[in-house]
Amino acid sequence: MRLSQVSFRYGRRGPTVIGEADAGLAPGDVIELSGPNGAGKSTLLRLLAGLAEPSAGAITGRPAVVGFAPDRFPTGQPFTVTAYLRHMARVRGGARWEPWAERLGMEHLLRLPLGELSKGSAHKVGLVQAIMSDPGLLVLDEPFAGLDTATSAALPGIAAEVAARGGVVVASDHQGGLRGLPGLRQWSLVDGHLKEGAPAGGHVTERGAGQVTVAVTLPVEDLPAFLTGMREQGYPTREIEETP
Amino acid sequence: MIALATFRVAAYVRSHRVHQALLLMLALLAIVYGSPAPLGEEVAVAADGAALTVPVLAWASRSLLDTEPDGQRAMSAVLVGGRVREIAAGLMAAFAACLVLAGLAACWALLLGASALPAGAALPSVLLLYVLGALTGTVLGALTSRASVASPALSIMALVLAVIVMLLVSASRVYWLTVPLLAWSRAAHDGLLLDRLPWLVLPALLWCAIGILLYARRRLRRAQ
Image (spheres, rainbow over the protein chains, first blue to last red):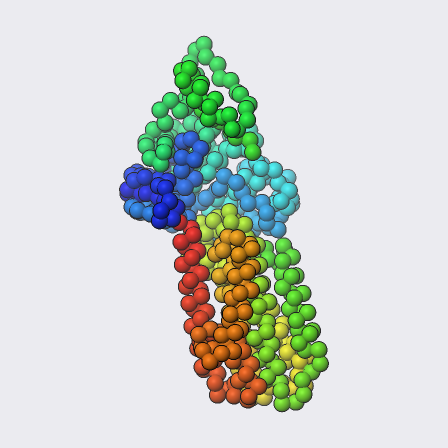
């Protein structure tokens, strides 16, 4: 799969969200896409999944079967988890969803209406519908957001299995949940420009001796100033989670 | 694609939105066919029903398409293999729902609205009008659904306005510019439905084809 000079803008006169992105994806790749909020990560994922067409450039070689898990699963639907996943499995031509539901620890959720699910539980439903049909391309938008510890621990293994089958996994991730995977490729998107590698000064990848990592809770509107201030003082700082 | 269409019909039924269109249709039929028409008018009253039910069918189509959250629509497009297939599945689901409601209206009109069934070729002609009514309702509903017109206020105004314009134009000399709903009725009342049928069906099919193309184009552009 290849992105050739891919640019994207909303409407003819809208600002450019993605500018001349050029990249290749090979079978077996697992790619972590990072970048600040509003950098265009979700837009790039939608382009990769085929939900939007580039304003310029082309995306070629997209696998026939694509799995897509959005950052927010739409729970406003009149189905139980089981009924919903059955329908999705039929749309996928009879894919088996039950093993995935078991693997993500969803047995206790199956009879619940979608509208009664917590954010994390709803997220699991979105993940199951994305991975149930052995996708050649698995696109995950913030897959670790709201997940419990057990599911967060299982997800890198699932991504590795998709890659081992020759699939490609692309995940936007603020939390670095895939960092333990060998051969992980990192893409960063800054101001609409796609680069291979983590954004400069944006990630804490390793903690050296004598260093600690702290968590700070603060109002969302204070976040940009806080991050800027910390970085100006020389502390490697990144956003982990935004609570709505 | 059929599985996705089934999913959308199931969502429409399970959300109870189907009850709105069903109750509206039943109320309309009860009023229009309060007492059976005398012998000889069975084709006319059935044709009237085919035209009058179009606004309800358009409402049903719009309602069905709006049942699916936008996020699910995106996931469905990926699941089914692209936006075009997702759009086609939505139209298929809306047409199926409209066809069921139109079938109900046709049965009511033919069995309770008149003293006898239309004879000979008149019966399939009348049934064809109901199928065209279902198709017209499907397209009108799609063009005014949330995926086409984001604002609910504008969407409902567009639906009402489109129906009014369609009725006015279909009553004029240039009825062929739209789905000729009132021309169907007039031809049936004049006993000329069979003679004029091709000229009443063709504009309807053409209008629906153009409407489907416009809907698909708008949907694909809004996905950019």
